[in-house]
Image 1 (cartoon, one colour):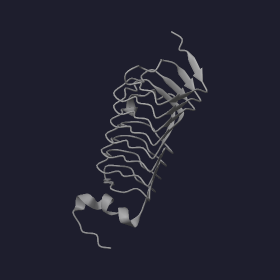
Image 2 (cartoon, one colour; image 1 turned 90 degrees about the vertical axis):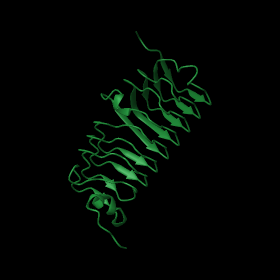
Image 3 (tube, rainbow, N blue to C red; image 1 turned 180 degrees about the horizontal axis):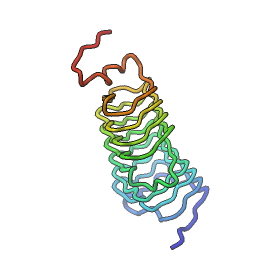
Length: 191
C-alpha cells in the first residue's frame, strides 16, 4: 500500500488522540499544539518535520520513521522510541518533558537533548557516544551497559551513572555531578 505524501502543511491545535492522523509520508510539516496522547503514530514517516508544544504521551510509535525531526516544548511521557524504525532515524528534543520514555538498545551517537526532563527514562544498552545532555534533569534515569563515551553531562543534573556498569571514557561531567558517579560508594562529598 502506497502512503499518501503530505508536504509543507501546518497542523494546529488538532486532537489526533480521537481522530487518528492519516497514515502517510509527512515532509516539512509543522504540528503545533496538537494532541496525540494515547494515540497512534505507528508506521508513519516524518521527514524534516517539527512538533511544537504537542502532547505525545503514551503514543504508539512502532515502525515510525523520524528523519531530521525536531520536538520543542512537547510532553512526551512513556514513549517507547526503541520501537521506532531504526533504519533512518534522527531527531532532537528541546525543552521537552520525556519522563518514563525508553531508548533501550538504540544507537544515538551525537544525539542532543536540550533542557529536557528525562526522569525515569531508560537508556539501557543504548549507544550515546558523544551525546549532549544540555541542562537536562536525569533523575532516576537508567544507565546500564550504556555507551557514554565522550558524552557531555557537564550541565546535566540528578543523574546516577555507575562507571563500572557503563562505558564513560572521556565523558564530561561537572564537579557538582561527581556525586552522581560515586553514589554507590556511600561517601560524602563536601563543597
